[in-house]
Image (cartoon, rainbow, N blue to C red; front, top):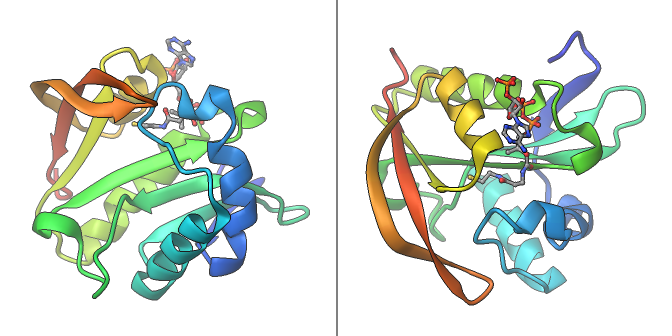
Length: 169
Ligand SMILES: CC(C)(COP(=O)(O)OP(=O)(O)OC[C@H]1O[C@@H](n2cnc3c(N)ncnc32)[C@H](O)[C@@H]1OP(=O)(O)O)[C@@H](O)C(=O)NCCC(=O)NCCS
């Protein structure tokens, strides 16, 4: 990924503290519906993702520093993706924005889902999240529907866009 400067590895339960630090950064949660503030919540989520195996940590190759995550948005307790669709989610440390990292990670996820035979990928973005829109467009997603007042972002209901993509496209 990006000439080997950053790599993807499976998200692990031990990433919970780094993940929490990331998603409690206002620059990161601001354009999203992230509202988690408790380590235990993310530890449980990390463990479910680790068992399911379709969400990655993005790490710096040189020292293994945690930069963010990309992959399945949610999994049910049994490890099944919600509603039979793979929803992609991602967030990265602001220091590493703007160098194509999210695009590379989402492309890898699209390939993974194609290999796994998942027929459809979806994503949901707040209408004002321009960087995320660019990432999805470059990865072959198309906007499908405007979803008024779809998700609560720190107490404020915001309009989102649902994006869709077939992995084989
Ligand atoms: C969305 C996010 C993961 C993108 O990460 P990234 O590694 O910077 O993404 P990339 O470098 O692959 O692409 C970002 C694109 O957005 C563009 N961009 C960056 N800031 C922008 C801004 N303020 N306004 C408009 N476009 C912007 C970049 O120019 C780039 O597009 P381009 O290459 O076509 O010019 C990162 O911004 C982030 O973590 N945001 C907070 C969490 C979030 O929004 N997650 C997604 C929820 S749906």
